[in-house]
Amino acid sequence: MDLYLPIANLSVNALVIVLLGGGVGLLSGMFGVGGGFLTTPLLIIYGIPPTVAAASSASQVTGASVSGVFAHFHRGGVDTKMGGVLVAGGIVGSFAGAWIFQLLRASGQIDTVIGVVYVLMLGSIGTMMARESIAAIGVARGRRPVRPRKRRHHPLVAALPLRTRFYASGLYISPLAPLLLGFFTGILTILLGIGGGFILVPAMIYLLGMATSVVVGTSLFQTLFVTAVATMVHATTTKAVDIVLAGLLLIGSVIGAQLGARFASRVKPEYLRLALAIMVLLVGLRILLGLVWRPEEIFTVELT
Amino acid sequence: MRRWLPLAALLLMGQAPKPVLVPDVSQRDIEIAYSFTGAELLLFGAILYPGGRLPKGEAPTDIVVVVKGPTQPVLVREKEKVAGIWVNAQHQRYSSVPSFYALASSRPVDRIVDERTRAIYELGLDSLQLSPGSNAVTAVEHRFQRGLVDLKRRAGLYLEAPHAVGITDGVLYRARLTIPARVPVGRFTAETFLIRDGRVLAAAVRDIDIRKSGFERFVARAAERHGIYYGLAAVVLSVALGWGAGWIARRI
Image (cartoon, rainbow over all chains, first blue to last red; front, side, top):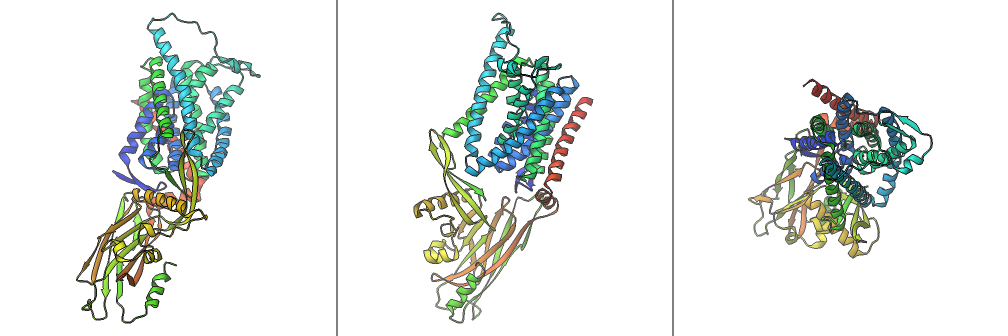
């Protein structure tokens, strides 16, 4: 079923876009990642102009995280205080991101920078998660003795001043740590067109040492607000948000997100983390190949 | 420019009597609605010879039809391998690149007219006048132009269709061209050239307006003029859909 997209200026198969949204929504409900790191590249491969893809997938991530946030709120999985601090950092970060985006775009290096940042981020986070989850699976199977965890959070985090209590997360740390974390995620949201969940989730576990039961819900909470701001930034500056494209993606992803959230509660979290780690590494590898292999198109055209 | 060129050509040739072209297109207005997947244009017309038909003893004429989209300024970048990864290196600006270019002719256009005439009338993908913005070395500029045209051709936006024009009894011609869905809106032109012995005998232009209609037009306008409300609508839509799905899921 062909449908014309009024902003992207081309017609697409509506069913393909809905299914793409559905697949991404499933992951978002399961892992607490927004899924933007999959939607944007897949839309570009389908032939949607990159700016429209990034701008419209931001609003798709908003929708997917709303249903996720409700699902997690329902079982007390959201730390609103922590979430609020992250959102505040994220909003400032998204404006900083918009500024960096303009600079890089003018110099023509935006695509390379996006690629390199993706590879570094995905590579390091994927490796870290894979090692941790494999160790956890080993422990769960009784192959190795349970090592007592010495540190709850990273020493750098502990060194920051102005400590306060985050009850739901079971933490007594400085709000500056999540504020900075939110800020960097906000930059990435604009720059890479992603929700930032796949960076936020591991950072919350390994850097802040948050209670794992609230990690996914709180990450989605932050994603919800920051992607909404990102959509507004795109709608007023690049004017590249295609509401028809976003609607199609949303229909698929909100359904997928519900199914994903139900599925997640039945699977052991170690296996879930390992699966996410493998996926993150694969996407990183694909982007790395894109950078070093001779590209199909040597020339690119940009309207001025 | 495009309007007076054929006229000037007619005046310059100044040998009466000349054949006259009466061209038409099947659609003067193309409306883009939700199910738009491209449009098929029929370009047809008659060649009016002074005697009512092809004069005896004269070589048969050729017809070339060119459909052009609105021109756009573009920036072309070229990737180069630097320190193991491919990055954008050199770039070149062009100030008048047609967003769409389709040429249909009764014979391959390089056998109908010489290179100079092709350049004057922009006949053929090798003869487009793209107005490069800098005085780069000709070889470099040619490389960029070839890259640009090649990209556009593979995107289906530039095409040449030799033998696509059929001429009946030397006086009626017709050609079918497809305009793909991913063209920008605006005023397109359909130029028809009557050519004999490498010279353009007559030329005529018809305009085709492509515009969005109904809902598509409303959305495009809202995005352009009311960015804040449009953005809010997108956010509200996504929150409502997400919330709705959650509400339903809790009740199943």
